[in-house]
Length: 322
Figure 1: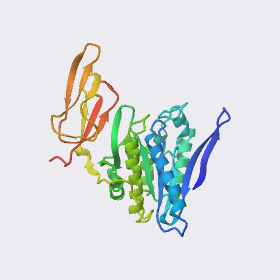
Figure 2: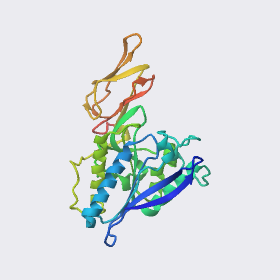
Figure 3: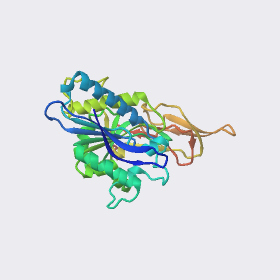
Figure 4: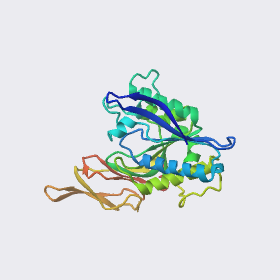
């Protein structure tokens, strides 16, 4: 393993902050493609840091015991937003800038944007394929999923189906994606898989282990690892869904959301997903039911819900008729 410092700066507290890449290369002449695994763009999303840990352990062990099994290069960017990670905050502290909304600028000026630009250029320089790993926000837990913008589905979708996620969600473009790392990598002809799993401020080892197995499987399928490398666990065939197969369920009343199902359940139409209660008066304000049949892949974890708050998303197995 070779450690590379891409950029860094000294703080007023006499500490140094650095953007680190851990790189693994084959011992023989390079024959396979190059993978970049990026995590920690948002400092409160910790799920990917555990996956990076599993991946680094695996690659170091492979390097010691079976070096010939690595056919391509693997570059791990394990914590790319150290200031936010150190503060356990989504945004770069101080100015409060979202690092994953600063890409694509012609003339970046803030330290956050310049830092993100350094990351972007380094990934483009060293990768033929990228995995950009995220967790959800404080309110929602997500099943492991790849999110694919329609524009890039031809190149990204075949890769996404090898990631061991529960589903692959192909969706339309939105303006907010234009400044993200995943979008700009895809625009630069580096196919980038944007994975979301779990919830912020938490580690879900079950999901982390699932996604680590998916990375190993992805690398085998793309010639980065030899075919004889063992993939831990059973590899899933993810459910492929389009935008019209996603049903969002929101609360109509404000109160505490009490779920009555578990994420990953297949729910039927009119199945009770949970209730909204008034903890002060002891009243049940609303019973929330599923509007259709499918896989429950998003579920509200934060109990406080306002009127209109998202509480669940359900993936229909088939596209509804027009």
